[in-house]
Length: 175
Image 1: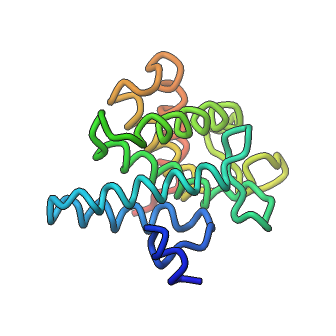
Image 2: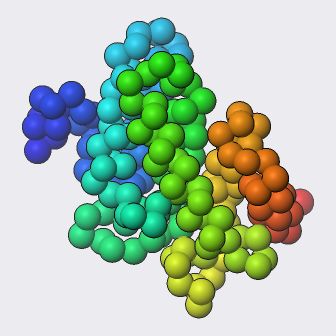
């Protein structure tokens, strides 16, 4: 099945698991940065659009996989961080940028709605009885901060949410 994905212009590592969209996107983006060969950036963007189309739900969040219908916090964090890093490197005129930005905005809106009163997000994002998940929360905070700094997100709305999340995460750092 890996050869089938590669034959369609995707990474051999394509599995349609949300974990992939951090790992694949980061490797392809770094390859572009080092070589300046646009094929890597184009591949990362094409891959991201595939995952957006296949896995993003109407509420903006992502199932772990097509057959795993749960909004896993850490996995959604990988999607948020992967989209954010890709958007930071994708030229404004790239043909897939608008689709990726639309997926990013849809996700960020949903994350804003699911942020808990503590500032964190839960292990299963939409399940209030699940525990606070630090790594997913950190990646969502990163996506908010970068979005605000780049003007992709409304600073008056997302800035306070990012600060609240940051302050909650600080309490998890030890000596």
